[in-house]
Amino acid sequence: MDVLAEALRVSGARGALGVVLKAGGSWGLWLDPSPAAALHVVARGTMWLHVPGGEPLEVRAGDAVLLAPGTAHGIAGGTRTTLGPCDREATGRALTDGTALHLGSAPAQTEVLVLRYERDPEVSTPVLSSLGRPMHVTSRENTQLRMTVELLTAELAHPQTGTTAAVNSIVDLLLIQFVRVWLARHPEGNSGSWLGALRDPVVRDALERVHARPEHPWTTASLAAATAVSRTTLSRRFRSALGQTPGAYLTQWRMDLAAVRLRDTDEPVESLSGAVGYASPHAFSRAFRRARGLPPGEYRVRVRVRAEADAWPRPLP
Image (tube, rainbow, N blue to C red; front, side, top):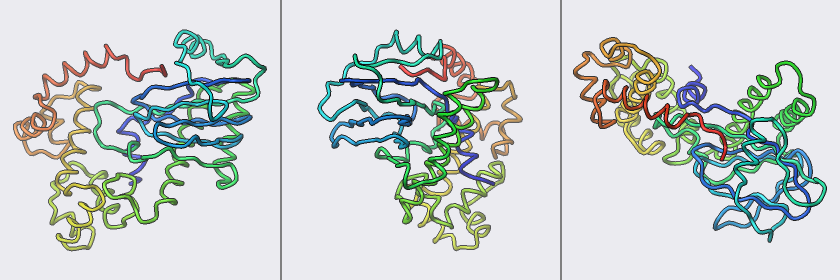
């Protein structure tokens, strides 16, 4: 079980190219908080990242910077540039036509690929939100990332049959590479962080077992036995890494799985309850209502109406 791949799959971390920015002269763009994580790849020139409360960060050609969901930020050609609002109409045309979004009055000297990673709003497991502060990776420090960026820019420079599928696959690969860099930079883990929990071998082993068999009647004792540690040790390490007990995490993951299946399938509650580890529909319904505030049947109706209204996944603003 690749627990990271499974968590990203269920959490709906779908990557896609937003827009290609071509900018010159004096330019600046402010981006409001979004449910999606943002990744800015500088293909040419230099970009400055502005985050409230922080110093401007220089991002050069070949570099990339990843921002967690909900991070308001600006991108600009300088450190003191005025950051204007996003032109939604021009951005919409660029998204629809696949053309570049031009900023500034001078000939373009900087090219930025704006990528996004959507998160399924029905999933509560905080995979991408674990990233915390913006993560800047330079072209010099990671050869694999540099090669992937070069592959992405080459694919966009010479589009052909299958370019859209190729770009989306490369964007997904970039996310995995950024997660690897994040883990390498945080060797001691990060308390309360899902990604940081993967650095603890005991917690990672327990997570792999839970994700591989969510329907199994796990208890803290049986999960500890499966991971060859004491119940006390597992509970302590789990709480330190994730800020919750193994039982609480198991319930959260089961509810995430159930919420997605209720929305995306017509599977009867009777069979779904067993698939996520509950002995009876009544026990499942009680647990689901406690977690989501609605019984499964009513939740299914409401979440489908909400999904249609929100048209998830959403494009960039």
